[in-house]
Amino acid sequence: MRDGERSRDRLLDAATTEFANYGIAGARVDRVASASQVNKAQMYGWYGSKDGLFDAVFARHLVRIIDRVPFTAEDLPGYAVALYDSYLTEPELVRLASWYRLERVPTGTLLSAHPGHSDAKFDAIATAQADGRIVDDIRPDEVYALVISLAGTWSPISATFAASTEDPEPEHARRRAALREVVDRALVRHE
Image 1 (cartoon, helix red, strand yellow):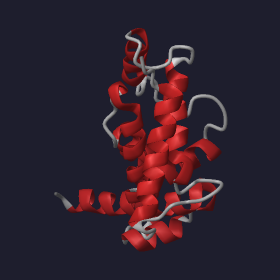
Image 2 (cartoon, helix red, strand yellow):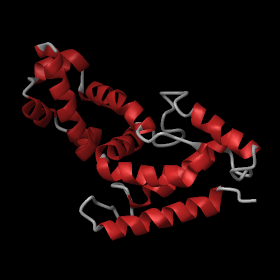
Image 3 (spheres, helix red, strand yellow):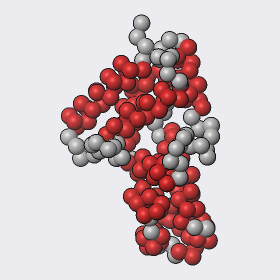
Image 4 (cartoon, one colour):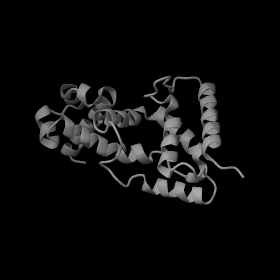
């Protein structure tokens, strides 16, 4: 890897931390430059502005935000639990998505500027609905939204309680069991 690539990686890593913690408006390029040991002139040369840097950070993590946890319509409760665990281990991804929501796309589909990322998930849910495995009186995109929202109940952006890796394992196990049960009862069809 060349020095320029290493510098760009350091810059994007530092910017990821900064934006996850402070959002676009609260982020400071001076802190990013200092943490990455990349001067501001170089940063502006690569990304044009703080907004351009955020766009690069978001684009860098977009696939991880969307596909960090492998999706299967056959096990929505298990998917929700896996999301819970991923929110614990990589809270910066949930915070980046939240800042993107708050500062870029306050209404409508979060990824309106990045269409097609969830189509395969929606199609899998529609197929499971047609097969009678998932309730069919809720649109596939809304089934997915409900699973994501339920999984985020204890996420770093929760309005009620944000879980931490420091919480005792029995607490995590209790939350996982509750999450699995709620998603199963609400969205899975049992014959």
